[in-house]
Image (cartoon, rainbow over all chains, first blue to last red; front, top):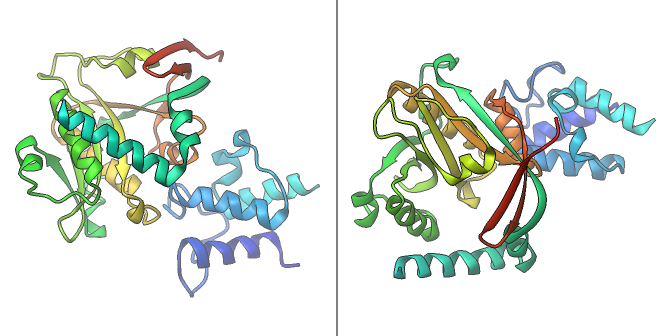
Length: 82
Length: 214
């Protein structure tokens, strides 16, 4: 099973950034500051991780602390999957 | 009156067609739904150029005579009818114009008649927001569904912020429903300042509101 970060990078490159060249940001780059994910993209991202990792994301968990970068999202997912 | 009936009917059928009858009911009846007002300090904007330009779009002021004459075609006719309704209420509209000169989005503002006047709007009373001179209230932002997911929403809003700043206004007020994830995400993108949230109960035209516990 690929690392969580790699799965997220591939998903964002293919489905959000629509680029075949891969996710061109670092794992710490802010989704919000860099406009990587917009207001509709976040809905798609939440649906993707719920499906991919068979989890339920609570509204209160969708915060910049948990969802603002590949690293913070991967940390959040690891906590959820424990 | 006829314009309003036309607008209401089209909006009703559009909502039912796109989202189902339950969504229509959900808009009219809700209990203790959280609304989060927020403000943006226009004097502290971190950008100087209109972010829409590099996307091939531009912000336009919607003028009543232009909308009536259909100078700019609206991608969605319901929004043109909505615009005519808003003009009657004295609101100022801004359009998101694409490269084909079609209005694909719009947002509406309550702007004071002169710099020292204070704005008034039922939403601001509902939100329990204290206004000051130099404030502008923005609401009813819309982007046509065919143009969503193209990263236009935040640049459209920022373009409006820049316009208002250059016109001399100091603070932009707005709000979103806490259960509206896209709106919540956008408020974070815009680096807005959250004001105390309120809880709202709605039964058709009747709204009851109270400050949510901190």
